Length: 487
Image (cartoon, rainbow, N blue to C red; front, side):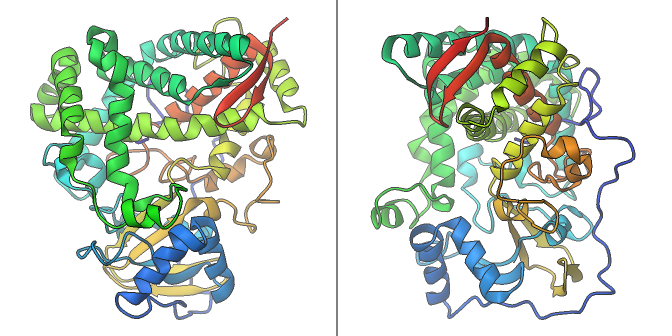
C-alpha cells in the first residue's frame, strides 16, 4: 500500500502530538563495534538449507527468532529465499536487522537505496508490468520516481472528496451480503465478498472508473488481480501447502507472466478506456507517457492498495471479531458517543481507542512482512547494544513482525493491547508498517507508503461503520458466525 502525504487537504494528519519527532539513526559512537555474526554457509548448500528452514522446517517467524537467539544479536547474516538452484541470478545473502533501532536505518535514503529490492534481490519480471519498472522498484535518486510518486499523491488528494462516500456505500453492500449469509447458513465466509468490496471501492476512488461499466471487470476484476499478484510473489511466500509439493511447485522457479497476461491486458484496457481523466493528468500535469501512467496506476491499484488491504483488513476484522475481553463494548461506546451520525475523516479522528486498535493490529500483523534496502555506501549501523560495519552493496532485510515486537520498545510485545497507542503516543515513532514511522511524512524524496494516513483512517472508518450498525460481531480472520444488530 504505497500512497499519500499526511498533509493532503481533507485528510487529517496522523493523530500524534506536535511534540513528537521522528527517531533518526544516531551515530553509534558509544556502543561496542561487533563483527556481524552469522554465516551464508557453503555456496549452494547454505542458501538451500536456509530456504528449507524458512519455508518448510521452521517458517519465517521461527526462522528469524531462532537465529536471533543463536547469535545473541538482532543483527546477523543469513540467506532469505528465493534461492538456488533455479534462481541463478538471485543473491539470497542478507543482513537481518530485527530491532527497532537497526531497522530504522532502512529509511535513511542517504545511507540506503531501494532500486529493485521491493521483495529482496529477487525481482519479478517486468513483463508483469508492461516491460517497465514501476515506482515501487525505483530508487529516490531516479528522476522518474519523483514524477510518479507526485502523480500518486495527487490521485489521493483528488479522491478525498469521494473516498468516504464510496467506502460507506460499498461497506453497506458488503455487510448486507454477510448478514444475509449468516441468517441463511449460520456463518459467512467473507474473504471473497471483502475483496469484491475493496476492488470496487478502490477502482472508483483511484481510477475514477466504475467497474460496472465493464461486465467482465465487474465480475472478475478482483480475481484477475489475485492471480497477477500471486504469480509475482509465490517464490517469496510461505503458503502452507503440503510439503514437499510447496517447495517443488511454488518456490523453485519464477512463474512466467504470460499465464496472467490476458487478465493484465484487460485491466489495462479498462483503465485506458474508463480512467481517461486520471490518465490524462498523468500525461499533462506530471510529464508521464500514457503507458507509464497506466502501468503505474494499475500497480498502485492492484499491488499496493488492493493487495495491502486484502491482507490487512481480514486481520483487523478477525482480531476484533474473536475478542472476548469486552473490547467491542468499549468500541461501541466510543463510536456512538464520538463519531456522529454521518461518518467522515473528521468525525473519526477523535476515536482514540479505535485508532489505537488499528495501530496495534498493524504492529502485530503488518501487511508487508519483509522490508529490504541496499547500502548506498559504507556506514555504521547500531542495534540497542552493538554497532556493526555495513559495506556498500550489502542487502539489509527486516522481518517486521519481529521488529515491532521489540521488547526494549514495546511492553509485553507479543500481547494485543487495544489501548497501547492511547497510553503512549511516542510509540507511533516505532510503528513501521508503512516503510517508515507512523509519525513520518511521505514525500517524493523517500519511499514511505504515500497512503499511510488513508490506510489507518479507512480502517478506522470501517470499524466505526461496523459498530454503528452492530452491537457485536463474532468470527475469525476468514468468517463471521454471528451478528447482533444495534439496538
